[in-house]
Length: 460
Image (tube, rainbow, N blue to C red):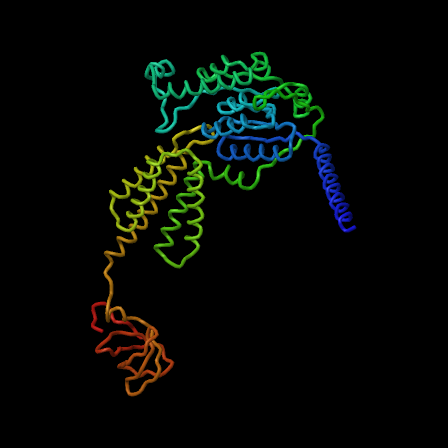
């Protein structure tokens, strides 16, 4: 009897588990599909790469039908662009690249990313192209005074490094075009000749798949199209899909701010001088706390940016020279620190793309202010070192005292928190205002504070 009851209990348990599993499967299969939108408005950088990665992870968790990557970008860093391309190619969710809104563009790095998406679209009044790699690192080149003709003749016939970068970019965009069945020849032209296309021209050249007015129109036109996702053909079912925008989190917004090279330089300066002020005046606390936080944020941003460590070392060496100039005034240290700081700033970034250029106005202002602060501090230090100082008994002259007791021209007083013997040639009493005129055998000589002081040539 007990065995029969136990068997019935086990059967009921398995039945309940099977019902729960079937219910959950039914719920999952009945969950409404959605089109998630990731909006990238601005330069392509570490923040954009992280935003796309997190957005694609969210799309996988929510089993989204498609991801709309809406772009309006002038380009950006090659390293971040390649990260984004790798994430798109590995995505199990179809990604529709969409250049919008009207008046926007997908220039430089944006063109490569658009080529990588499973389906490419543009809004009317947008453009893409100008994907020529920018020579990176070193000082910016200046145009020759003879105009374009002289400038072209002044350039070397072939720059091996630039040729390698250009050929690598051509190979990348051609491979993406072949993967997605798009116009590879025009992609190469965009790289080598900085060619650009409008939305309708891009559609005619088979660079994009469709032109859509808005997201609803985009999903309507994409419905029923076949895309290759991870080597498998997939038919899109996008008509009347609800659209949700994935808003970037606080960390992505913070990254977008601190990875601006100019903000990074400011954070490094604030951090460096905050620690200098804290070490020179221990106990102030605020400069140390602010400086440490700013320095850590600046170093974190540098870790995300493609930097030249020789340039960073030169900048830090220049700052160290300027600090030494403040405490040990010499013209050589100040000028050397200024030159080292400027050279380091020029070499700091290995790559400079749209939105990731060093502002020479900022660098020049920071260098001038730093040099001015160093010279100002140095002038005070120099003056203090050459100012005649009063030590010993002379340092006591003029100090106010508090009379404790007084009798027959002598008594005891408080001076600088200490009890002293004192005498005076004039009558005094406890509570009178007096000051020190001299010290002899550890006995203070006093006078009333309202008495006329002897001139510097008169003996005290």
